[in-house]
Length: 290
Image 1 (cartoon, one colour):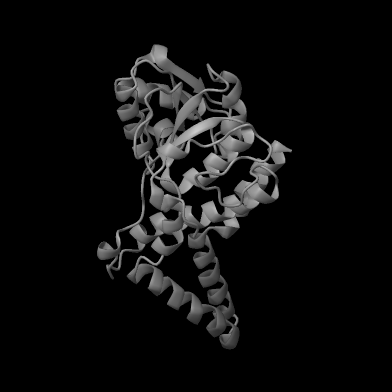
Image 2 (tube, rainbow, N blue to C red):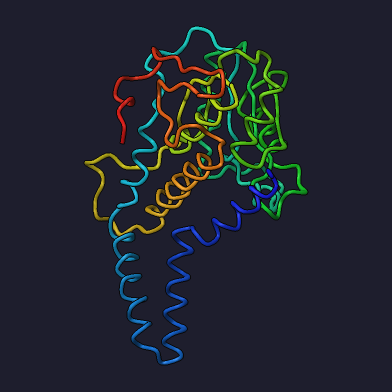
């Protein structure tokens, strides 16, 4: 079942990615033009062009991303004692690292910066990386685990502190395969991942019975005063693509029983797992619903 879920998610995203949808729509409109079906072409190309222009001109994607990034915040007061730091894979650029035989970070490379900071603040706890390969075509490689070990040691974390899980292909498998490796199954672990990804990650951790304290990094949205007409399509897609994917992911994971709350938030308790959030560590402004 996990294999089918993985394959379906990858194939489905190829057709649901906003950037791909725009290209498919333009291509379909061009096909109608080639066959002189101007009426059908107009119905497709006009709204698609308007949507593409708006996406290019203004960061409307921020409004889709902001609720995700605001759901959890960095702890208002850092916990005195923790049992480890969990970093989710995704900050690596696996394909280019393999291509150039050098450790390359991707857009979520901030996960490593956040982990390095926490590792310095808590020098006596293990650093637990979880991530294999989320690509259909790179399953036969060493995956993100080997790459993560190299990056984590390069940024100053002692290799003896590292626990590497390199089988997982998605967030559900991250916690499924990491849970047996935890030094203290009922301990409390700081969780480092992208802010937009944190709600789904926390929901899955709770469902799996892993006690996590969110430490979000890698923000993609702009503050209100910096949200301007700037005609920067690439920058806007950097928020739109992961935000759209994350809302789909939240929905699919909830419908398939991998989480028991559609949009997890601070203060919730899993209905099936044994986890409970530590209320005192969260700032007050993130408890509101969106």
